[in-house]
Amino acid sequence: MTKTTLDWTGVIPAATTQFDTELNVDLAETQRVQDALFQDGVDGLVVMGTVGENNSLEPDEKRAILKAAVETAKGRGPVITGVSELTTARAVQYARDAEEIGVDALMVLPAMVYVPTPEELAAHFRAVAAATSLPIMLYNNPPAYRVSLSVADLEGLSDVKNIVAVKESAPDSRRFTDIFNALGDRYKVLAGLDDVALEGLLLGATGWISGLTNAFPEESVELVAAVNRGDIERAREIYRWFLPLLHLDADPDLVQCIKLAEQIMGRGSERVRMPRMPLAGERRRQVIAMVEKAAATRPVGARPGKLRAG
Image (cartoon, rainbow, N blue to C red; front, top):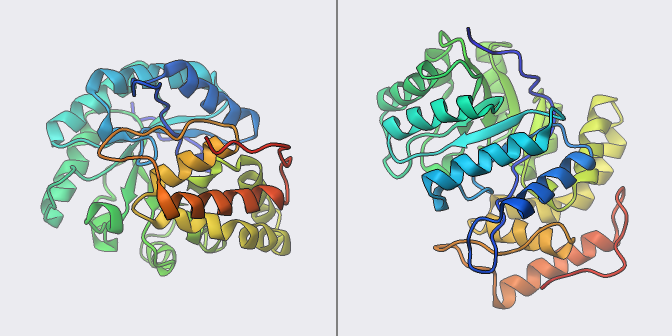
C-alpha cells in the first residue's frame, strides 16, 4: 500500500551531519542538532540532502544516521531522507533500507555524476518509486546537479502514485507557476532554494526546505507562519533581514557556509569532510561578519551574548 499522506507543509530544514575531530560521524551531536531544530518549531527534517553531505558518507554511516534521526524525531515531524547515489541499483537498495528503518518519505535526486537523458532520468525515478511504498519528493536543482527536471518530465511521471512532491531549487521563480499551470495540484511543490523562498511561498509552495534554518530556525518558522496568516509585511521584514545570508544557499560552498553559521550560533560544528574544507581567509571573514550582523539584529530569536566562530 502506498503511503502518500505526508503533510508537505511548513519549514523543513535540510539538517547537517555532524563530525567529530577525526571526521567520524558524531551521532550524538547530530541528534542534538536535530532535537534543537524540533524544539525551535520546525515541521520536519530532511537528513542527508546536500547540506547533510550525503555523498561524503559511507553506506553504513547513512543507515546509522537514519536510525538516529527517526529516534530523535519521536513523531514530532516527518523524517525525509535524501536518496543520492551513483547508480540506480544503489538508490533502489537505499530506498528499501530507509523504509525498513522507518523514515517517512524520500527526497530522490538524479543519479550522481552521470547526466541522463530525459528517458534515463524518468527510468531512474520510476525504479526508485517502484521499490518503496513511501511518498517521494523529486529534487530539482539544475545548478548543483546539472539536470533540469522539466514540466514535461513531471507530466510524464504523473502516473506514478507515490511520486507526490517536488523540491524546486531552480533559481527562476517562474518555475512554480509553470508547474501549477501545467499540473494543477498533482504535486505538492516546496521552495528549495533559500534566496527565492518567499517568492516560492507567495506563488503557492506549500513549504520550505531550507539550509539557513539550521542557524536561524525561529526566523524561518515565523517567516512561513507570517505568509500563512497573510501578514505579508511581517514576512517581507524577516525576508529582507535574512536575504544576505540566504544568498549563501546558492553558492557552491553552501555546506561550509551553513555549518559555519551553525557554529557561530552555538548549534553545531563547521567540520566537513573532504573534498570540502572549512572556509578560510577572506571568505571566512565575510561569512562570520554576515552571521554576526544577522545575530545582532534578529527580528525573532534571542540575540546571544557571545558568538562562537571557532
